[in-house]
Length: 108
Image 1 (cartoon, helix red, strand yellow):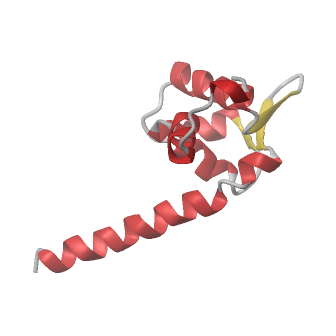
Image 2 (cartoon, rainbow, N blue to C red):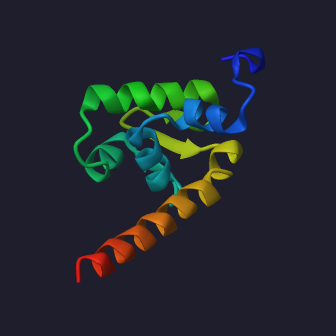
């Protein structure tokens, strides 16, 4: 994707880059360090091998992560730009916690 193809709105750009739950969950797991394909498959509950492969390729093309291939394994690591998503993911985590507390209070 070229710079010219990106939306003018920065929020829309972020959504375009991360636009699905799978990518966000993959990034969540890679924020803790390099992971093998099988580790990601295990930790991202409900994702199929086909979808995981597709999302990893998309994120590699965008420059969010890098793929290293070894004779017996493949590893994925966030790039520097990928790691800059940490505050976004952490804000989502915090909001989710707060929302759960709010819902629990309403149900009492």
